[in-house]
Length: 110
Image (cartoon, rainbow, N blue to C red; front, side, top):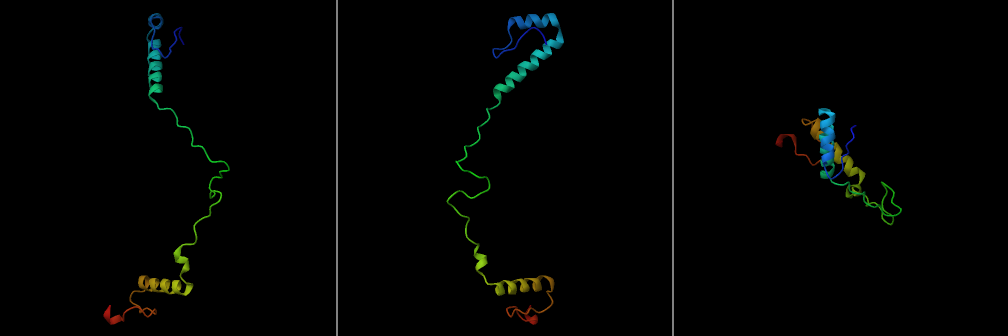
């Protein structure tokens, strides 16, 4: 590069004198350096990562806790689930067939 230095104070008189001696390409370099310094001043400082508690294991439940219990749907007996699934399948795939669940209205009232 040239014999001038750029600091945080900006362009100095000696820098301008050196640019005049060296030509237009050095002026571009100086201006780009000034732009970079300005951008660095505007960019916010990086935030530090949050401090993890001692003994932290990623993806694990915190020490002294447990996952929640089973969902309420698991309390429904299997035969009830099977009947509901059979009813749903009959309604979706065989709408013209009578259902064997006993809750469906007769074919005439549909």
